[in-house]
Image (tube, rainbow, N blue to C red; front, side, top):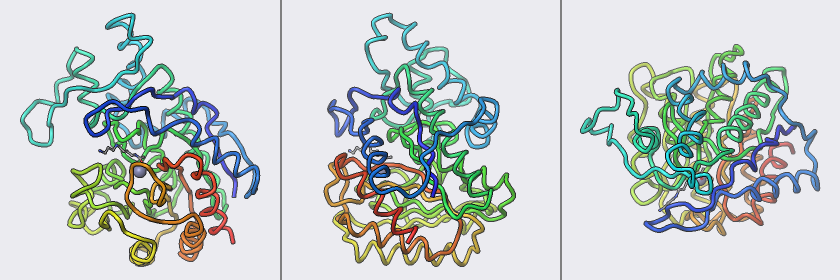
Length: 351
Ligand code: Q9C
Ligand code: ZN
């Protein structure tokens, strides 16, 4: 399996995030990716490459899943932040006010001139700091997703997009949950554009993939499946319930498998079996796996109890689905263990 890693990832390096009502050091740190890369050097699965995608190709791929006004905002956000106050050059930008667009209590069609207002319009939490290198790092990650999807379109059984910041919480026009561009959705749309008729997304991150679900919610050509902590108690709280099945043409093409905090490997595996059965029934031509390792027992912000050796089994079970697969790195905040856990899963897949 080839790995496409993001050489620009460390340009995104947040200082602090709002977490449970106070500012704490960011959980989503550059060392996460470094540990995975080091483990892939120790236990090689294939070539380690950087993407090699042109700016124009990348723009097209990003525009396939994100709105133009959102990407224009992200591209200019840092300069606007610094223009508000030159001292902001030494601070990360964090949202602080939101339009509650879902309740139709505020207008979201009129683009505010005020930067703080636009920062809120295009986000859903205050845990995702934005800084000078965020846009470049996020673009580098989208390029990894595009390159990995092309590798599978070229006939490879699998490929790995190793990037951060993660992507599965980012929607058509919003960031949050440490995510800015939805790398997994970009991979899925690239597979569709490359001629794969039915693409499935199997999200195994601890947190519901609200961004990916939203992007594909009304489509029947991309099946989205997510196994995650029950949003009744777990982030992102406002999406990810079992009764969200898709809408319009997409009705029946979204499957959420929420599990209670504290769930162990046996029950988690039963959910994975259910997920893989759905992907079988869908008759997927290609699969994208947003691969979060925050289901690990030692994860500092999550509540499942998977052990390092369990990830080998997870990889084998995904391989048994028999579908060409793009893996995309997502969460996993037990930093010292995330490399071993990620490579255990990928090695299990390759067995
Ligand atoms: N009170 C990913 O794993 N903060 N994002 C949780 C709980 C956000 C996780 C706050 C967690 C986002 C990609
Ligand atoms: Zn997560």
